[in-house]
Image 1 (cartoon, rainbow, N blue to C red):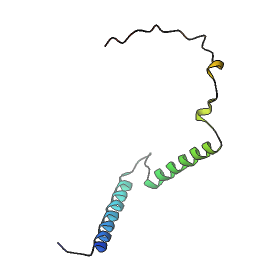
Image 2 (cartoon, rainbow, N blue to C red):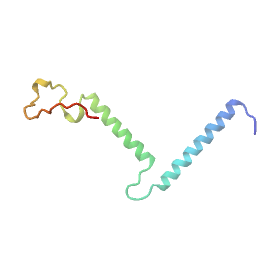
Image 3 (cartoon, rainbow, N blue to C red):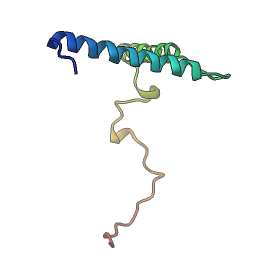
Length: 91
């Protein structure tokens, strides 16, 4: 095995890792065929768009699915609920 300076050895390992990652991505892109095929670029853009939408929603103060978040128990109508008899656990 060749002896190299630590920085050179690290550089070679990083270059090799980068090369392997690029080859893997290229192989996956070649494999993606058909009507619903997505490239890695498409997936990254889709994730970015979702992140932007979530960030805008949070900035505007929108809450989850438009539900009220400041409802107290006094304001809730619980007249239609049935009480359940409490039974001890029978394990």
